[in-house]
Length: 148
Ligand SMILES: [Zn+2]
Image (cartoon, rainbow, N blue to C red):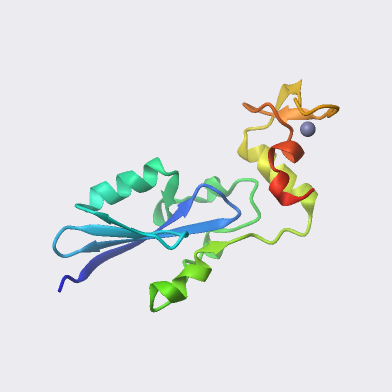
């Protein structure tokens, strides 16, 4: 029976929503990742697991710095990994949608995550807002899931 030798928490690049992934390394050199979709991924080595998370735009929690939260109404100490004894307990806590009452604040966060606004107008028919930097759409049309 292999034992867990190392536990790391990783966060998807989706702040202020928190999408967690748990990485476990085992004493036989293998590793696994439990993600916020409830899937378990097995890896031959710890480095393989970390590479996979990096490619999936996850950031290691203990590598995050205050400057990574610029423009986001969260502090490093607010980023608390989910707790649970089993994967079934963890799963509903692996995705924590940030509750923002103020849509203008969420918009400003999204704009700053894109590095600002571009000089061009949103491509959506009839929209006169500036599009997000590197996108064809404004923040409202680019992120309809927030139901502006
Ligand atoms: Zn638009």
